[in-house]
Image (tube, rainbow, N blue to C red; front, side, top):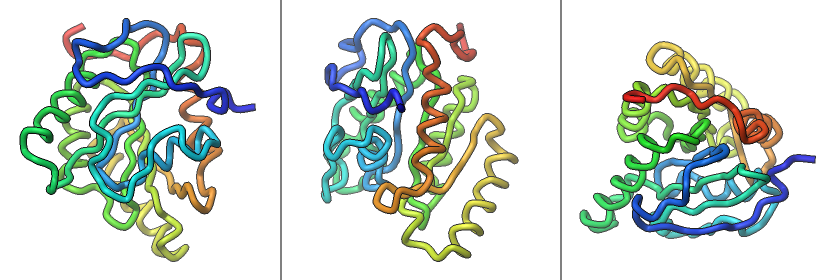
Amino acid sequence: MSILRNIEFVTTVADTHALPPAHGAEVAFVGRSNAGKSSALNALAQRKRIAFVSKTPGRTQHINFFRVGDDRYLVDLPGYGYAAVPAAARAHWNELIGGYLQTRSCLRGVVLIMDARHPLTELDRQLLAWLKPTGRPVHVLLSKSDKLSRQAAGATLRSIEAALQRDYVNCGVQLFSSTHKIGIVEAAAKVQAWLGDGRNKKPPVKGE
């Protein structure tokens, strides 16, 4: 049985200074607002509302921690790139995301959710470029892939694979759909491999 099914909410923080102590292993979920991040978390945990799903992008304004085992956590980061959010709020969310991703010593990997119909936007590329020197492994979920034909989905996957292999070698990618149960087993296996037993050696981080 997937350890992700044993998920339980732990805490939410609105400032990097309030982050819980860094120990064990964490996997972070990040993506553009309305890319399907919360739905992906719910699908992997096989729950309906472990992560809040809203039709209004930009609702997740805090870092949310979920325990999935001894010293093992999934971390839901604020969505980025929604233009209707006030500039001050966007700056705060970016500080939260950047501060966590750059400095969190127990972070084992990052799951980046992209809408399969609009993958590798400029903001996605900026996030990947920023993460690249940290050495954090990244796994891209091309969400809402059910909204594409099989041929279009396959072509998108091949195109994104080629782009990532060229520019972000420490990054994998797969098709995903929370509603049509596409790629859930594969994505869960990747997350569980990163979490390990909570005592894995952390990946290299610039400056450490």
